[in-house]
Image 1: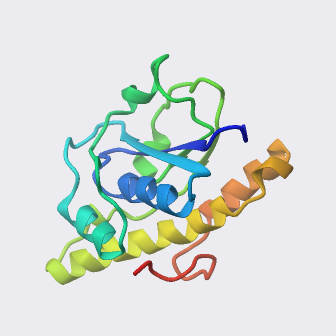
Image 2: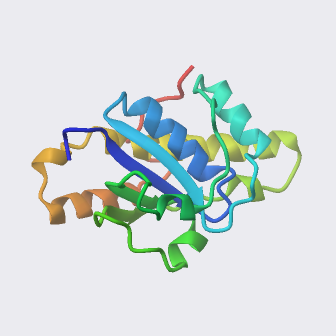
Length: 176
């Protein structure tokens, strides 16, 4: 796997917020060692405006960011995934396709910021919280010694990362 960047797919139902945040974060934090993708089982067809705002607020590129169907990653011409993570409980409960190459999978559930109620400030806070939780997890993930872990060890590490809560200090502070 190490002769190319590790391909990482983040799945959610709508692919308008969490999975897109994760895609951008792994591309940024992975520093060329990882290539992030995202998709939805029932994509909304548009990126939530607060997703763009949160990424830009943290200095991450949003170039080419779009809502995609996971079918784009099922075909023979799609990049082969090394890792597939679900970031919403609904997508985790759905039947996922059998991915070519049998990537490592884990569930990293994050509360949906797009479903937040309240005024604009409360909605922005929900996006900041989701961003930080994903950032914490992805920062740990990209530092794993993937090549030196056997499959059961790696599976356990990925599951552990999925259990890291917002209050854990596994990640670093906001990018500014």
